[in-house]
Length: 158
Image (cartoon, rainbow, N blue to C red; front, side):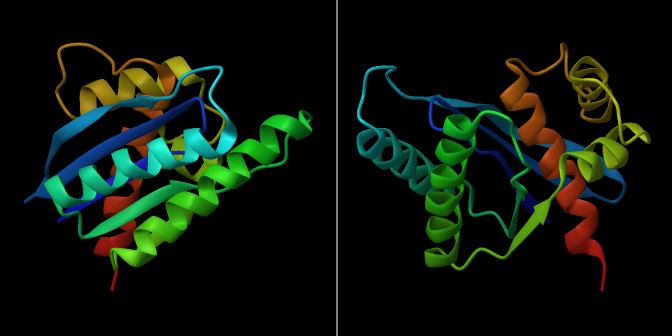
């Protein structure tokens, strides 16, 4: 089973692709797509969509886990993330990739066993779970790989 985890954003979109084989976990790819700071919002979304489409063609995930939108005090940031999520959900649906939406607390619980874990704790557990030489960086990449890991258990359930 191969799951794509996506941490949505318009400036930086984290991605992580994880596989499970008989209780062993493998990191297939992890990183961030970035967009130019001064680019128009539509240009940013289009660039991210092209990157996501290429990632889907290259890795052919059997499912995707995306972070559920949480309420933010910063309305501008929340709107940008909502726009990115809309593009991501549409792109995944067009590619016929099943989607699960997970809350940040659900992911933290799935990775660390504690729903209020810090970003650093999540990074270190992702490193250990996938036997990586160092924690994924930046945070968006680590979060996306944590989403992929948690998504594995979701899609494994009957």
